[in-house]
Amino acid sequence: MNEEFGIAIDIGTSGIRAQSYDLNTNKTISTAITLRHPLPGANVVDHLHFALEIGVDEAHTLLMRAINKVISNLDIENIRKIAVCGNPIQLSLFNNIEIRDLAFWGENALKEQNITPPSRKSKVIKSSEIGLDAGDDVDVYIPPAIKHEIGADALAMLYKSDALNKNEDSLIIDFGTNAEMALIVEGEVYTASAAAGPAIEGQTIEKGRLASPNTICDIEKENEYWRMKILDDELFTCDGDLINPKTGEVIEKGVFEAKGITGTGVIAAFSLAIDDGLMNNDKIYLQDDVYLTKDDISNIGKALGAFRAGELTLAESSDIYLDEIDSVYMAGASGFYVDAKKSLKIGQIPPSSAEIYQIGNTSLAMAKDIVLNPKLLDELQEIADNIESNHIMLATSEIFEKIYSLELAMYEQGMPFSTYKQWLLKYGFQDLPPIEENPEIHKLFERDIADSGENPIKTVDISNTMTTQFDNCIYCMECVNNCPENALSLDGEKFNLRSDLCSGLGCLRCVRNCMQNAFKYNQFYEKSDDL
Image (cartoon, rainbow, N blue to C red; front, side, top):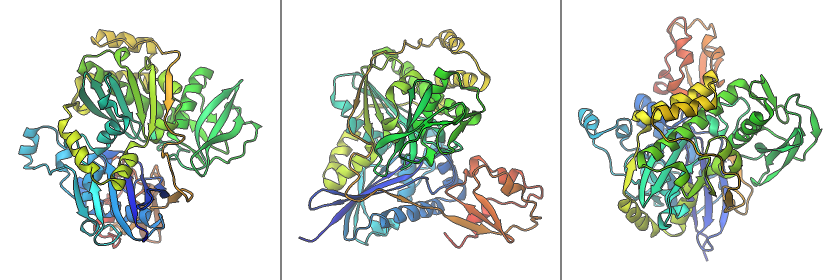
């Protein structure tokens, strides 16, 4: 029997995950992941802005180059099928189709801009049409969006949780940089997307990394000390060092070295810091020179605030109280590895959550289902067509604006939580219910990617360096010295930019700090021979 293989790909805002499968046996062969997204920026808005300003073709080229690197690291040949899942922006960049409709809200705005939204229904295309290095005649399966702004990733949450087939009111959240939320009330679906920011996945945290081997994914209290929990090479959780978080003293050495901390680890540290009165410390010590700063704590607080404000906005919009929600589903790597009780305590999920399911990477899981059963694509389109969905645009929601302003007041100005609750009532919103003491927590798998395959997980380097020179530059180094991500460097008279490290058009400190007005960000892409 000839070996034939399929590939499932999840294009997330913070990185890419892919798996290969033996189509004769349905066995998982290998898994490859990236620790960053190839496009500059920390969230989908940054990626959309980049594509609009620099060009969709350039954004598509950067994305495909990274995906091709990931595919090559799966170490297989004779690829016959590929399925890809992600949010509308990522799948539009993958397809290299119109993306401007995702930047404007409402039919009138689209008419004014003369934009015709493309179809985002399910489809099958050939790999050669979009630049995939997998063979010219390989079928690429793309699942449907529910609406143009509610993507295949949201459909994956609903499908893999099976919440649509249950007679209960449920809240489903994908715990990523762009937190997709779906609230099902009496069979009707209310959706929203909260730009929680990269801190939730360990980015913009000084020692942060995406979930990967040798990262701190959780922390447990042992007397007055903290026990680090480290991901091993297969993404299983193992004991790390026992640490005094105030001094960094190692009380007991663990087996695994820590190279960084994930968003789930940061959330655990955030929760324990509240309990131990460490929120105002200049530094919270963890393991192997991994630590949290005051800025880190502030960033994760604002990210958590986006979750709570989004959940409250959905509840207010659907006329349901948070304590009336029967079950909560936590999707994505962050939603899987985080301690659900800590999430409940610090407001990442509703405090009254009594039935909690941690279901892992639903986007990759649905892509796998499609690869192994391509007929599922038609079923998914039918599900998408039948969903009665109400999308709440948080960017224009007065409810969200008011609630998130309270969150910012807590984490930036030190407003007491009691005052926060008083303001909720003044605005006419529901009060936050008390914290559930004994929630039922169901972890459906041992890790967020249930089966990583026969081979060790590979972490793929997708670094991409763009090079250019600027007229009138005096080489004062202000641009390089003010780059917050160390994405910029100078080699002789040429500037090098790592696109995967760059914070993108939402930052531009390089441009603002150029005394000669010589620094032209777009020039890296206009003149680069790499694209």
